[in-house]
Length: 140
Image (cartoon, rainbow, N blue to C red; front, side, top):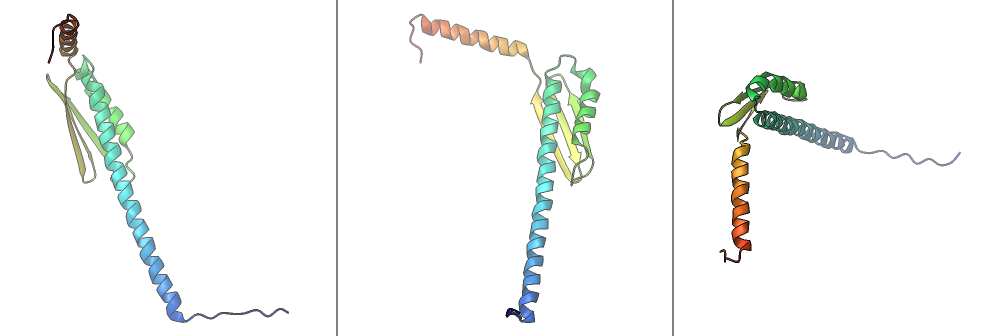
């Protein structure tokens, strides 16, 4: 039989290792919990922004508020850490707004309502400025 060396460690070494590992595992658990919380807040904000963005581009948006609220809640539930996700969208004459809630978190967003006529006026003004610049007149 070969000589087998058996090592004995003092008991304090194993106790210290157990304490160190428990602290490491606790730190990992806290990091995972925080990552889930951040995930829920960020993805909840993104879902809210997507739904408000969709409704603000519709001409008949008032009829679609409930549809987009239901779609947002379907996409948002279940939240891994914060719990139930609720979304509320309002469409007014000049702005679209939304509120999302999950657990202790709440997010809000406000956007101007899409007005294509404003965009067309701005484009027409840009084209006129371009024509003036091309005509040889000095600009700025």
